[in-house]
Amino acid sequence: MKIQINEAASAALATHNVPEIKAPSEPARNLLAGDWYAPMKVVKNDFVNKSLSMWAVNLSVGCTHACRFCYVPDVSTKFLKPQLSALGVEDPDAQWGDYSFLRAWDEEVFLKSLKAAEDTPAAQLNLDGNRAVMFCTTTDPYQVFTGPKAAELNRRRNQMLRRALELIRDRSTLNVRILTRGPLMRRDFDLLRTFGDRLMLGASIPTLDNELARVYEPHAPAPTRRLETLRAAKEAGLNVFAALAPTYPECDEADLRQTITALAQIEPATVFMEPINIRAENVERIAAHARTLGREIKVEVFEPREAWFRYSMEQLRLVQRLAGEQGLIHRLHLWPDAGLKAKARFMQQRRQEFVRVRGEVELKPEQRLALKAADEAAYGGHVAWLNAWWERVSEWPGTPNPAPWTPPALPEHPLTPPTMVAVERAR
Ligand code: SF4
Image 1 (cartoon, rainbow, N blue to C red):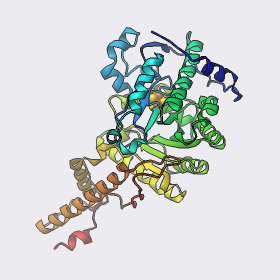
Image 2 (image 1 turned 30 degrees about the vertical axis):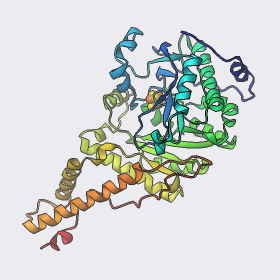
Image 3 (image 1 turned 90 degrees about the vertical axis):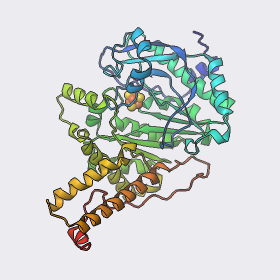
């Protein structure tokens, strides 16, 4: 393994005049932390309908923030199990949050991958990728390592991050998007400012209820600290965005209004939002952790699948309404999950809702036809609303949006059954 750390980058890190930020105090835990065998590089990402970036740089395998809903461990389990097993991780999914291995640094490898990204023909770029490299998509760039090797790993993480950013700035024309839960980003404001409109800095802030966040993101810094840091970034002249993501089932209207109001005051370029989606074992992980805390949480929204559909749709719709109220609608970027488009499930739920509200009524053949037509129209409206969000290209400062976009109107809830008057009309 060849580690080459640029001395100027180290010196800048040591001398910049932003005050040292204290790492969050971490309770002792059995963290597996060390070195990963492969070097860090720029890789194409496979985002669909997110409009975050075209490429990713991931500093480590694993993440010390340990978010219980995290979608990444599924990938670790599928593709990296043997390598993780060799480092002492027996179950990458169940142990998510208890391990993080810092990638090696090889400047030649990094530059080669950067050049490949830079040289990608325009025809191969996704319009919604903003020609941006994202730090990070499978870990957090400002996570904190703990344990016996913590000082060395944290120092090297800082240096690698800064050096990679400098290389992207000086050896390419690519943009950079940084998304983190870590207030340690403040340390790098000096460097980040040198990118001008080529960089966007964002924080994940799903709620401002720190106690609630502790249940879902046990080792991540408190959301109120992330908000303060994002505000400081804006005041420092950086372009900022926020990810109201993923919102928890306990995030009710008052909670979401509080977060959206606070975000609106910062005027982020974009506010991305999604509820928790079901991925591999994440619901079991959420439930198990809540049990260890003795907390009752609304796990019933994930099972059966119809319950998740309702939770997801209700939060997405609620956030669209609240963003409208707060003057944030043109900056909102909802991420509805692809599973919301499943037609058979949609129709089944419409029918169940009809029976729940109208009762078991005997319908004549022409009434059944009218009901079916109403269901089809509701599904068509639902898909049009989903598509409007999926086709959205997020803002990039200093660049006209290549796909000008109008927020879709908030339609009637798609599961609302037709009135009997409407069905009667079919007689
Ligand atoms: S910070 Fe991101 S990558 Fe890390 S555990 Fe949380 S969701 Fe996963």
